[in-house]
View (cartoon, rainbow, N blue to C red):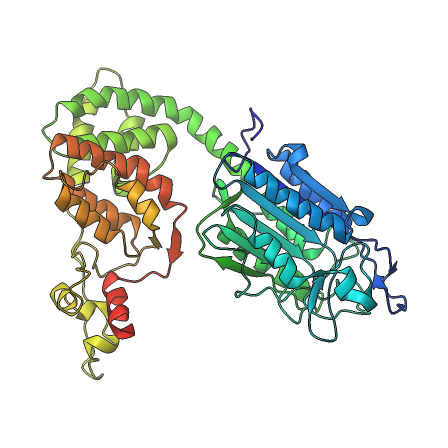
Length: 510
């Protein structure tokens, strides 16, 4: 379990890692030297890469004995197989369904004359790869068998035959999008380069190009990110760009790749700098916000507004955690302006309450439909009609089995959309009994089946709340302020588009 007292832990529950780094091989020679048939060029950075990656894990909450390390002569073929099996046993006996498992490899990969790919252990022989190295398919099978859906794999090795290349690692697995790490969500792989490329080491640097930038991003060094949590996709996007840029400055080609199966978000690090900044900034205002909120609560409670419960929950999240969710930005800005001018005993809380209710209940601006061009032929709806040219009634007629919600078909600026998994939808809507609140449950569950933005689903919940009973409003408030945010940040990000377009694509596919 995470070490008690660690505020920097980026995971919840048990966590295990296997870290492998091989720079000096049993049948190895210095780079640039002529190789015998059984030899590999030794690597200058691989052992240090693995050592530094393991140190990062241990500094950030991993219990030391849960980070298994195989360095140089420890990383024989037998030892690697044994430790992968031990990692599987650790996951199985962890006591939770999906413990976090991380596998890191820095060293040579190679390909034989039959185009079969291998990871090279310490005792690998170049003229006997089938008998001495770890085959690509066997390694994939071992990873797929790990009993967890929270698996992250980093492979810092090459995809190309790099015999004789100075500062480059040898050929490694054909790890592209088709490679399976097992069934389920939350199984991730990042490799240091794509097929046909090499993974490079810079002589003047402590680590290889890939691991250098990986550690920088995990430690949040030289990065302008304002996110407190470092998520997989955000890290990969930045990592790929940094590695490409560094390699190109040295006239090399190196492009990190990722292979993901049924992906959802996973946290890989905590941005301590940004977290501390937020703590420092918010410490001075947090107490004042809380005091003002306490003065506001009884006034809000006596209000006749049907949204008072949700407003109270929205403000509670804001003053305690600084999260702006469930209301327009102007709502929170207005609240802060009153906090700044608040004097105990004044009527500011009463005035603020009235204005906040008005701001919260204000109808969204009407959608502006783009004008159609008269010079272009209008496409048929069943083929490629734009969302703005298709009415809800038309779509519903063509696809009656999935009636879309008018609340979600909105023209105008597009928001980031995410798709919740069926389990997440079930969790978010827990508390809305199917029989007691059948209509509300059906409306929201249908909307959450589609890619949706936060403003869209919050607006839909608010619309239901405006005419709901007090018990239902309380449930809807917990959905907006607790359940939805908890699962939203982990949901799959999809291409921003209107639901009308999604439905039309479904029709086209049929």
